Image (cartoon, rainbow, N blue to C red; front, side, top):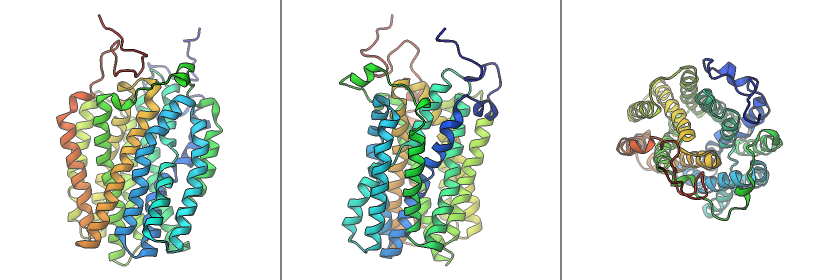
Length: 428
């Protein structure tokens, strides 16, 4: 029968979910390995731009603004990339995107080294951000196909969060090392190279990408995952998470520069990302009995409280300790948010939903690097840490006020007009 699932494809629901079971899923490694290489550059991009432009202009404000343009472009275009991937297939979207991103990144590097005016850097930053390959959401969508109705979905969400954060451990360290010991442009050039090689290898794995239904290719009108109320709440929450990433990237770089130890930047950011990664590993190993909505509220409250303490740190040791706690608070929110997408959004719109969340992080990061850069230039050292505090507190207020929208609609009801059905389905 077509509905029969072999044990090699989907572990039995009676087994306790775990990473070992997850990684034994048939075909998983064929997209995990190239997917990891293809998403590594995402962790390098913003910091590489900040370090390069700050070196050529001498201003964290200018560096943050260029990085922000990249982030805003990514946030605006990522959901459309996700919708196209849902409609035409991941490979059809990924290959031209990878080529465009590589060319744009090299162009931005050349302009920065040539001391081009700021408007020229902005112009190059737009396509650089718009073409960032959305490999993370694509990997999550592939897990959704492999593990449909499996208890391992939460484990997969945790595994993906751990993978993301591992890249944010390695990426900043690699970008900082290349920019400070090799050449200020080396980080961005390495990012472009990894995008090209990893992205093309991932695109070559056609056997594991979600199938595209014929009606999805030909249908003229497509409802967006954004029409699901819970997705909009998650977007606000993920913008707050992005404010932590962006605010810390600029502020940690400025702090390291202020104590004349620029190489410390990668270490401090690595500690922050390591906390996120360790918490993600723990979240995936636990068989949760608490409802995901409640876990999200608890985790995000912890994030807002720890992020609010960052601006008080005046030593590298204290900053590392607080960064570790902030990182450990981010993982539960990220994992639970991505897990809720599987409950809130039909399979045909999940890649788009994931890219909305990824884009929200990029948008929050873009706004944060801009504001944090201005605060570091105009106020005191460490003023940029006020950005993660403000971003997470505002998002927490929104989450508390609209938490009821995160409850999935009962089975059999239409989640949103046109999402999952050609027309609204009547319920008796």
